[in-house]
Length: 208
Image 1 (tube, rainbow, N blue to C red):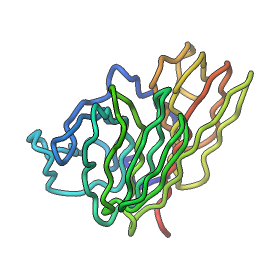
Image 2: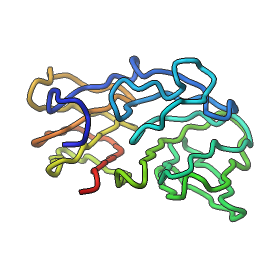
Image 3: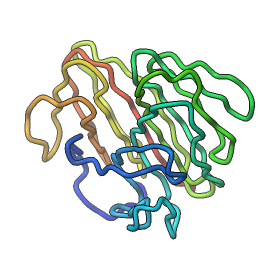
C-alpha cells in the first residue's frame, strides 16, 4: 500500500466528484482524480496555483484549449495520455511530439512543455510522481468481455474509464455501470471488470 491514510481497499471516485482547479501557471484547468496525501489541496487552498507543499503524486485530467505553456514541476516525473479523438501535439524541450489518442508521453516535470496545433478543447490524463519518493506507470487497457486487475503489495492502482461500457466488482463496491472518467482506486486485492471499454491503468509505488 502507498503512504496514504489507511482506508478501504477499493474505492469508487466518481467523475462528478472530481475537484476542478486551475493549473499552477494559471493557463488552463484540470480536474483532480486523486492526490497523495489524501485531501491535500494542490492549489494550496487559495486557488492561485502556488501550493505550499508538493504532493507525493497526483492523477488528474487537464483541459487544453489553445497552444499554451504547461506548468513546471521540478523534482517530478510526469506521464501524459492524450484522451481526445484528435490526439495532442506537444513541444517538449524544443522537440515536437505528436500523441495519438491514448498514447502516453513521459517527461521530466521541469521540462519546457507546451501544446501545439490545438484548435479546440482537448483532454489529457496526467500522472505526476515525486521522483525521490515514488515511481509510477500509466498505460491504456482494453476490456473485451472481462479483465482482472490486481495491485502489487504497497502499490496503489487506478482504473479510469475512458470510453465504452464498463462494470466493476470488488470488496465494498456497489454493483453498477461506471460513467466516463469515473475512477477506481485499488489498494489491495483484485478487481473484476466486465464490459467493452477502453481504460487507463495508472499505478504508483513508493520507493523502498
